[in-house]
Amino acid sequence: MHIVIIGAGLTGVSTAWYLRQAGHQVTVVERREAAAMETSFANGGQVSISHPEPWANPQTPMNILRWLGRRDAPLLFRLPAEPARWRWGMEFLRECVPGRTYRNTLAIGRLAAYSGQLLRKLRDETHVEYKQLQRGVLHLYFSKDELQRGQRQARILRELGVNADILTPEQCVDYDPSLSNALPRLTGAMLGRDDESGDAHLFTLQLAEAAQRAGVNFHYGADIERLMFEDGRVTSLHLVDDHGRRGAISGDAYVICAGSFSKSLARRVGERLPIYPVKGYSATVAIRNAARAPTVSITDESRRMVCARMGDQLRIAGMADLNGFNLELDPTRCQALLDWVEELFPGAVELGKPEYWAGLRPATPSNVPIIGRARLPNLYYNTGHGTLGWTLACGSGKALADIIDRRPPEVKFPFWRGRA
Image (cartoon, rainbow, N blue to C red; front, side):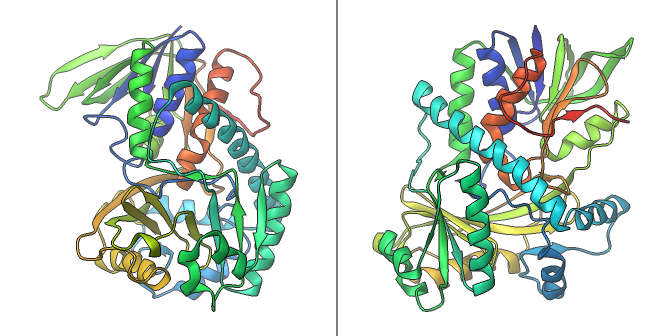
């Protein structure tokens, strides 16, 4: 079959790779000038298999109340809000009940563990290099309640076959001496040993090059003007480039991997995807003192901040803004990234010339991505991965390739089935 993929971010390129490996002719259509120029460009850099718990959990509603009025709050619901934001927010709160959180955690965890296995295999086969560090992700806890939650999370992860160990504060410093400054405040940590970190943008570019060598065709700078239908099937995409030139492309099947823009594309076929763009921030800074900078990727569970070392740079990321498709950089929230890294790793990085970035994560209320067939028989979705795009990319791409080939996916997951 000839399969047309919409979107060349992490998810789209991974999907293209696995479909090509399955023997299909694959074309990727991307509105930007290259792969991974939006949500996949400067994210937190983690492959965080050990973090399947969704933002929608029983602790979040109280945290939201506690964060009200704080410009540097981890989650910020900006007002006034359009109806879509209110609707998504209400669905998000519904997912915060314990039973739903546990169900969603298991679904994400299974897919994450499966995806991690595929990523390691892909790396061995393609030899892609992306400044990767395979020392895991260290989840820091600064209260007894957080530590207890981490212990429960570690038990769930071990049931899923994920290597996760609880460390004492002293063991954290032994594992990475740069944490010595945090020792008096730490209550413990969880080390996800199957996790890794690196440059997701570089990974996507290299995988796109490998896919192109394998025969995948990429069309960059092509925006979708219309989806054409006939007899209940998608027949073609009508495209327009930056110069106003128009064209069309046809395939046997189509896959929407367009991040936060997937919702508007699905609406054209009469289907509502529960996706909302959640803005995240990052700052990339030069390392000034290598001995003070972490060599393991860090997740601060209190502040919802992460950092990852990428060669001679450190990537700090965090925050979640619900503010539509607004990509403006909020100076207060940008500064919060630098304040956090300086507090945790004083003197480690150059603070004078940060490279700030903001991207829109395509988030579902449950944090469970949308993978599967749409209402139309030759249209498919692979989108809605939120903060776990890189973590879930390989597993999502391989599972969708199996679905398109009418093979049972190798992972247990609530795959999407088209609905009105």
